[in-house]
Length: 430
Image 1 (cartoon, rainbow, N blue to C red):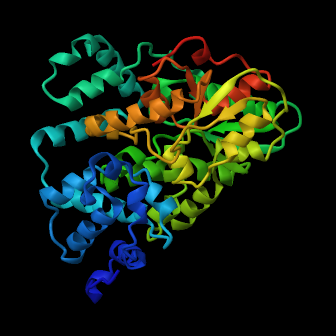
Image 2: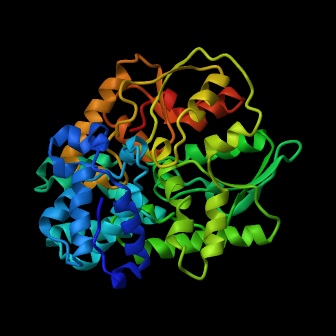
């Protein structure tokens, strides 16, 4: 794609990066075939190619975002299926992130939009606040049909029937390895996940320790920054990321780390991008090192000796977009489940998003519901005993529309190697 940025514009690192991405695009349209919003809406402007044209025009002309551009960029899930499909290697993620930051700085949203986005940014990344909000939503859930805005109804509908008690395993501490220590790893405990489902971190710690890992919960760690990053709130996302970089760097400067383990794939995609986020800042070297060490829990488990057993359970594996497209991890979780003895099946169109996508199911509820319905239908068609996923957002989204139990992949692996049976196998927790 031909671009016409000025020399002065190209001196700005974000513009220079977007210019590289835009010039890689050859207008082929392969991305439209795998874009969920294009499949649902059938509008070229709701495809990656259409959004790329609008973003190019906005950035090249250095103009404030207009309502039309905002509408179609907001509808993007950032599922990144287009990046997997693209034969030219267009890094759409960095381009749409730049567009969102530009929108945030130059466009005044309607009052309700501003209020909802501000509220989400002040609640979801903070586990204590989120727990209180979930409690309030649980109380208000029976009255959700009285809400005048579909997004407010979606927020009430998201509230789980049960809010788990706080797990003290998420507090800063060190868990020793069982037997000979093979690795020393830091576990990212997340933010929303700590409020929605404490079983995931508990199972991860048990499993890693059993397989010879010393597990560190670093002091000072918090939200990865993804939730506000995808809203275009760069300063907030960078502050969150910097806290984690400092927390893990302190551990690196002490006894060292072999890996930073992340069991929420949406967080993993962002942490692995810290090196890019801070590439022109003083902490660039530290950020790059953290990104280099960041690994999805499935990547770490492949390096360890998962016991081979036989389980009489049919598992439908849902591949989170942030894992298969954002991190290009596709077969590893399935291979681990098979090694642990489970019968693994995969739904039709596994590359398509379930509609969760961070806060997307709250901000774009109608499109999200359509994608959820399609995903649940394909999963249920495999006649599974249980659904496994590697991302809490997907688990909440899918679990809200099916009676089939849904658990984290690591919970099944923990159970197969001597841990407790996942609570989700007994009751649907959504």
